[in-house]
Length: 281
Image (cartoon, rainbow, N blue to C red; front, side, top):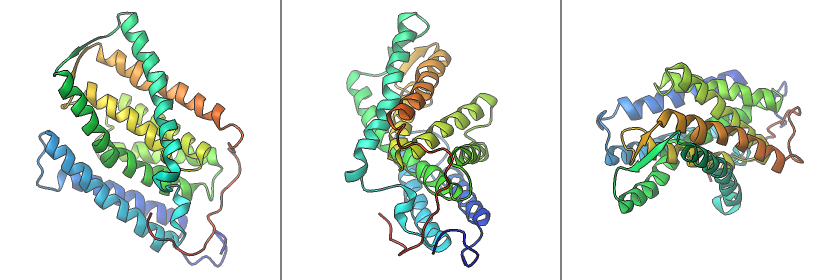
């Protein structure tokens, strides 16, 4: 049955979006505040929260797709890694190349000084661990909820550019409600970041490129800032603005638009056709 027909027996679209959004907020709050893991940071707690987030959020989206949307899983844009690895690497490159330019500018002009806060071996070990933890705690579950489920549903009623803006607003509200975006600068970062990730979803047709971009940004950001940082940085604010966010967000957006210009369509609604409600990946 075509999407949004008069005989569509599913819950109304706003209701489906509200259910999944509220469920996501509650699950993230539960992981951080409702478990006996404690509020102090250590790698083991970080790992436990990361695994728990994926274990809770992915089944929630699976159930929402089956019971609320009653549509095939494939529509959410998460094909197998065997299919999606090229887009994953593309997303990582769209962040890493502009970020490398930003680091070069910051260091070359003396805006930033970076020192090791641990041995080289410890830095490499931490970086490898963070790739896994960021994937489980942020990149996979957040992309699946916001660019996968929510943006996919929004684009059935809105032009793609409108759906990108709407999911970015929801992502920013999510950040505020879970306590990750309570200042003006953090709210702005959340909104712009979500816009970029929404563009990746439109440009590639799946969420793997967004996962790659998200993974690159969050992994390196956590190496330089936060309680688990392994670098000692003077001028961290400048580094975050230029190398971690500003240049990668702007140039990554430009790169994906140029690379995928033949497949970009900002105005055509995308119905979510019915069919056998495929199981999880």
